[in-house]
Length: 132
Image 1 (cartoon, rainbow, N blue to C red):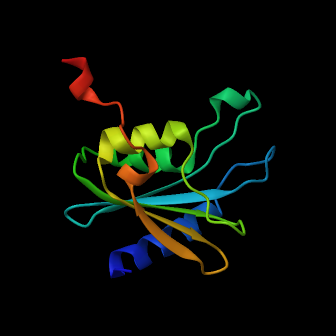
Image 2: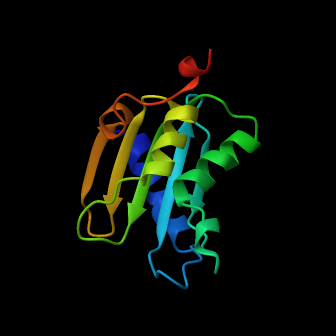
C-alpha cells in the first residue's frame, strides 16, 4: 500500500465522523487524490427522502470537480463494517466517469484494507465513447 493510500485512509476515517446518517446509521468516508497530490474528502449525507441521499464517494469527487480538478488518481472508501464495503452501483458509474480505471482502496475501522481497480468493480462500463 502506498503512502498516498495510507494518507487517504486516514483522511476518509476522519471525514467519516461527519456523516449525516440518522436513518441508516451507516457512516461512510471517502477521499480522492489528484495526480498532482491534492486531496478531497467527503462523507455520506442522508435525507428523509431516501432517494436524495448522497454517498461519500460522490461527495468527495464532486468536491474535487467543483474546485476545477479533472485528473483524479485514486479513491478510498472507509466504512465501519466487518467486510470491506465497495462503492454502490451509482458511485461506481461516477467514479468511472470522473476517475477512470483508478485504484479503489476499501478499508474498515478494524484495519482491513484491499485495493482493486475500477475496471474490476465495473467491467464493460458505460461512458462517453457510447455517446459519439
